[in-house]
Image 1 (cartoon, rainbow, N blue to C red):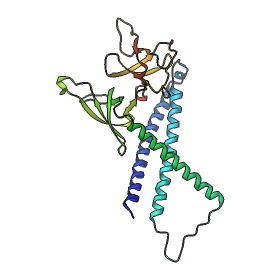
Image 2 (cartoon, helix red, strand yellow):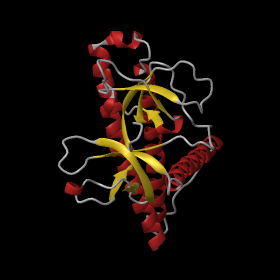
Image 3 (tube, helix red, strand yellow):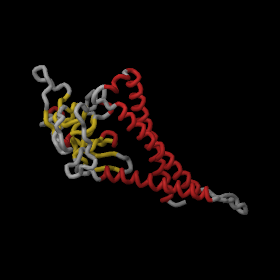
Image 4 (cartoon, rainbow, N blue to C red):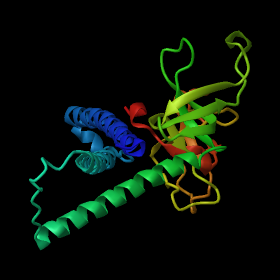
Length: 269
């Protein structure tokens, strides 16, 4: 039994454990959406509400995780079968495979290959964020809730699926000052849109709730899109930030498109 074979089994076991934990997180979010829709079903009729589209995204993600879990489990079984003895000597294992069985095996092998490729692509995408600024959800010392702010990616560990990030904004003197580093899971990181790649840039219509960098700061807050004149994805957004009242009204503030991302589920009410 070689070391690479054992390493492969352990790696897939870790991936299986990670998938199941992520499935649990997604199911919690789905249940939250179900309770919300049961309590206030009329919310889906309000302009700008995306409850149903969000629920669809969650179900799609849950389906993908489930399919990937089956794939990884199949890979583990195949790895274990390859290491287990085939049976007592003199009693060779009988293997009779019809065309249907062969085709099924070929399809499973193809599914495993696609899933492995997809996972590698996701890991590579995370690794490629090194040096980039992203939005991160962090709980500061002695804080009673998480906050979102801009950080710089220093490194992504493919084994632990964790980002090492740097808060480039110096802290207050009473907080020790200086820049701070954090290690965060992928679920706490949101990449910003890129100016030179508009293929994955999301376009938020008027009335949409978003998470955006407040002008002149590195902090992100919940906001609502109010401008309806945007003609291109690269146009600035005009936003009204929650709790940003001045003289009894919410001022409209201009934010570049690359500093606006989809509102995370935990901030939706």
